[in-house]
Image (tube, rainbow, N blue to C red; front, side, top):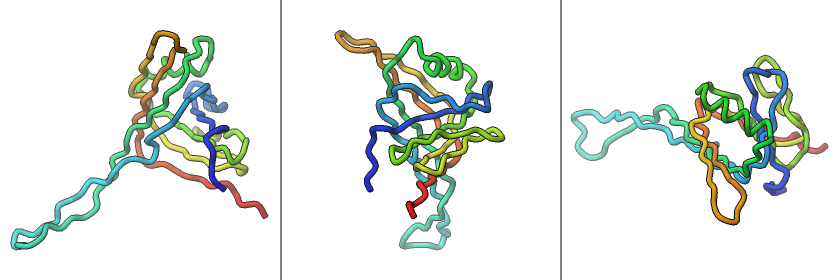
Length: 159
């Protein structure tokens, strides 16, 4: 079954309310969560005359871009502007459209439900950009700097 984007949700765990995940309102896209090429470590010996050799180094987590439609009355939008000032790494989780459960929180982590596929990661809010244009809604783009890897949890198959 192919995943559709309609019905996808983004949640974050607010460090000031670590028992209740916050659903981020009206993202219009999420890109870059799984990016991050590994560095390379040169292992070429001085006596090599033909080709260089390399070993795989550490991954360099990329940035995640989340465009959204700004809602000045929405608590999740107000909160991200406050959290940007802290530069604190936050727990994030994307719930895909193959289910409807919401994540729970336990021991400072987001716990995915079994009825949908999830993509979890840690990132701080690196930038928030607001775009105001003629004859348009006010839009924003949140840039998250991922720290560490990501965890993909697949929906449990139907029996």
